Image (cartoon, rainbow, N blue to C red):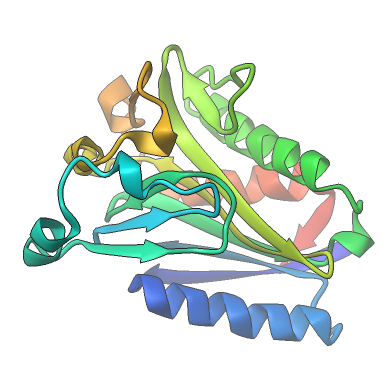
Length: 213
């Protein structure tokens, strides 16, 4: 069975999160770890993926900067999304050659992990044809955007737990205009970030058939 180290970083800036991922990638590439599950929160930040998304900003970057909201290009897949406190961000850094060399499979397993996490709190998360991520009814509750090089993963998912969804009003989330976003708190789930993180770690270990340390 593969082993994954869990690193709970707390609230860290987006740039620091990238540095943590890079350090983890180096250790995984060297064979020190099979994988690392990094869990954290970010201060308010809007990120733009490889599919673009600057055109999906509803507010000019200069105005956002004046509000203390950074806008950054990233190497992950997907369009534009945002992070802020109360959102559980997960950056799994895995050597997929130890699991399965299939990026599509990997993304589906991340979705499965998030769906299983929601089930633990009585919420019926689901996939939606043609889209990546996890939904509660017509609203998206978790976004996924990954990066894979030499079969080692980076970036990952963002699950809205109890964050201020007003930040999403600054963008067209994931470039999807026809659906909204939601959170566990908005669905009257009282679980806090610590409880959600604990549940997610349990499900991650089951879905990816790995021992978390």
